[in-house]
Length: 383
DNA sequence: GGTACAATAT
DNA sequence: AATATTGTAC
Image (cartoon, rainbow, N blue to C red):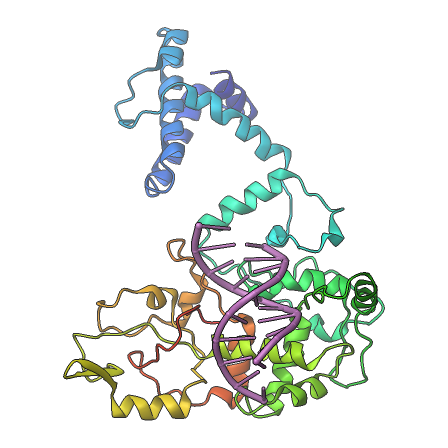
């Protein structure tokens, strides 16, 4: 009760008005009764409480014992209120934690331990993330070229996609390695730190594995850029890529590895298989008792195998069960939706979309959702 | 240069 | 525990 009256006062209204307000609130929430069951209930309770207060009927009793609000069938009883009060407090206390949710990134590299944000931030972003339907990722990005070898700026709001693989790396990378700036191409002094590290490590331990390379966004962009210059991931060769990227300290192997991953994710095995329903489309046909790759498919597969088109199948598509509707994959806008149900569906970041979009690389759009290869067991996720 | 697989990081 | 990403060996 205390809570209510307090609130009420702050709003400068009497019970009647407040109740009205609450009811209005409840109407709004009602729509989301599924999503915000507790909120609904809270408001309901509040209304009830106010009414009782107003009518002068036994106050405390109701509150504690808890009245029988008709609506609330589910019962989270009295305690609920108390429990949530603190929350309100919190919320108000950190009203604007403006912020970069992208804090989710924690790096393996302990480099930036310093910045410990308040939990509230984290929490907030968490639940927000789970609820928000809009596409989190903001623009950002151009700063790629801004970078100066010597200093690294941390863009607080970088492309924030919570889910992008490279973002995480980016952090570490940023601090640990600076990449070059403009494509202009002066060689970039790469990571001082990274350079330094190896030496130390080597001296210390022979067998030590070399430090992981962090593929920052910038680095990756360079990679993509090189790729496009070389005519795509399939034609490009690690060495060439490295040369074009012109990043100091970057090794062929690293590029190779990255390329491998890129290819892997790039050629997306579209999981959409309408097997039974659509035999024609199926990559394999059953002959006798063995499966044979259907001619058509084979052709496609071999020729374009790897460059799947970009538009990544929507998450739904990716995990859709085999038997699903023949319907094609969902559309682009889908990417903005995060369906919690599907595990992180990562896209090869902007990269892919960018890249593909801009460059003809993946020109071959032909693939129908049905066709696809399957050869890939592992991550089917689009990169 | 490409792959597979081990080692690590999340 | 499962995955994703990166390093190595072949």
